Amino acid sequence: MQRVPVISPDGRPLMPTKPSRARRWLKEGKAKIYLNDLNVFAIQLINEPSGYETQDVVIGIDPGKLFSGVGIQSSKATLLKLHLVLPFPNVTKKMTARRILRRARRGRRINRKLPYDQRCHRAKRFDNRVQKKLPPSIKANRQLELRVVKEACRLFPISHIVYEYIKARGDKGFSPAMVGQKVMLEWLSQIAATSTQFGFTTSNLRQWLKLPKDKADKAKACEETHSNDGVALAASYFIKWREWHSSKARGGNWEGEVSVTSAPFKVIAKPNIYRRQLHFENPDSHKPNLNQDRKRKGGTITPFGFRSGDFVQAEKAGQISRGWIGGYTQTDKSKNVSIYDVNWKRIGQFSPSKVKLLKRSCKLCVA
Image 1: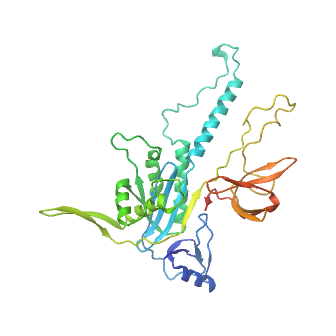
Image 2: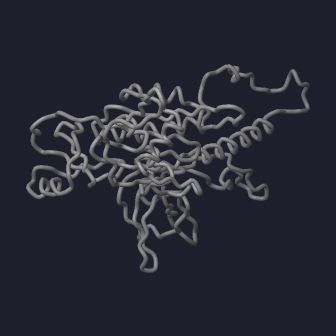
């Protein structure tokens, strides 16, 4: 049976309750709906609870390059499953475009008719080969995982975090998912007690718990691709592998007790918002005003009262669509806003008068 997060009047997370009890508290006026960025149905008590004692609630994180899985588990129930669509390819594409535009601007600035020592080359500000910093694409991945963990800690009394540690063995290649693991563990240790686990242990426990795994298409937004691995990681806090030896044989078995149940499943991504770019492309040379004839690119504000990342509902030809604002068009012929789905694929363009704001942008797209 699914569980509903419960929040105390002062904002502290308590142990989740049954949906029937949550409905009864809402009907009797003992609680109210608690809004959160993960769009999980939760309630907040109006009066002081009878106690603040909590049981162990564990978060399991299965990191990846393009997708990550998160599972929240207690000893008696699975509380939440999350499938994270990481911004790695979007950030990589933006960084490549920024590098090309920057090189073009530097090339236009330099007067190549002068001797080399008299040209206006920019002196290097630092040696970028000795810095210990994360690449922007990897940092964006880890920050999205950290943001989700912090939001989950506002809903559940998290006591422990289990993070799958990726390690290349033998002649296997290097994976971008391995980058930033130590930094991520430092961030997580500031939230709750954190431990690591290798992937083969997660696989063995997932098979013992009889959780299905879909390896054919890892981009599929379902529980079987990544979130079940997160549940297995979280369950490893309650179940341990114990080996035994005898005079004639040796083996092992899983010791402990945990109950894996059905739980709400969410797909989370970041809105692919483009920054405002003043030098997106060269202006048209045959037009008189070169500064105003550049193609508009990026930005978060629209002239229609919406912002990029806002969750809206739109209507066209009698069909209702829900999605996130990703841009707009304003010309003499048309004025439209573009709406995208959780994978940031454009649903369509809609008239601003047919668009209704449902939720302001929180930099998360939850489906």
